[in-house]
Image 1 (cartoon, rainbow, N blue to C red):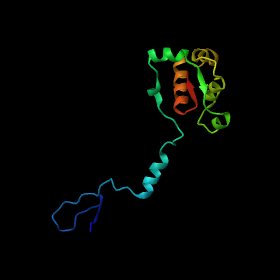
Image 2: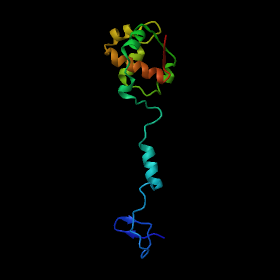
Image 3: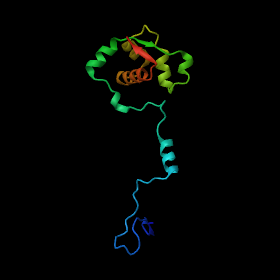
Image 4: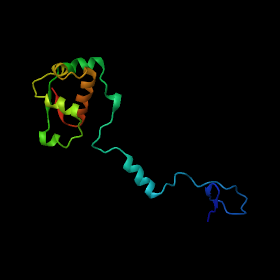
Length: 128
């Protein structure tokens, strides 16, 4: 059985000639593990940051593409969307090209492409 030192619990016994070493930090209490899990992002959240930026060649193809809705308005009500994303989705009608959406929305092209890619990952739109 270990003893407790000023540095915390140890595995060494008194008088065994072994210098006391603190127990590994890997032993984390159950309540600490639960707290760590609660800090994780929800599966419904989508965080990719700048990794979703398009290359120039790919974005040329996408500009001519036409986004089409795959979800109903009822399904979109529970999607993790902000006001700007909702505004953009309101303009997706299955006939308007990505380039026209840039012109209509006033959202900078690189940002709009990132939003469209996010919508694709969430299964909200397809690009044809």
